[in-house]
Length: 161
Picture (cartoon, rainbow, N blue to C red):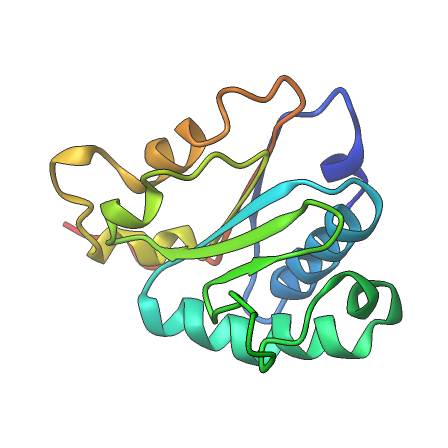
């Protein structure tokens, strides 16, 4: 958590055990950058179901229950709201996008300063097509930021042939 806000650190990798709490760390990183250093944020999950579930079970309650975040987030039920499960905008200029690893289209037209990869070993079963590997695609989305932050985290799996 210190590394993700350290100006001298650009990229970090976390090889972790199961149930380590990396998802909670991601929640805190998202909260920090939304509230204290408004930035465009991209979270990459292995599958669309993972991205949607993370948004519904982690992000939505956090935005609702954290007063500082609730103040900058508009109600997704409002008529003029453009808030979706996978894309959220904030009154302070920050935004949050969730994509899944096997969707090269999900990476297009996105420029983000903060790139958070979750369960990267789950990307091995995904195919991003001719666009390149998912991690390279995600990192490329941050190239225009001198102060970008990239975090890759995963629980290792058994070696494949």
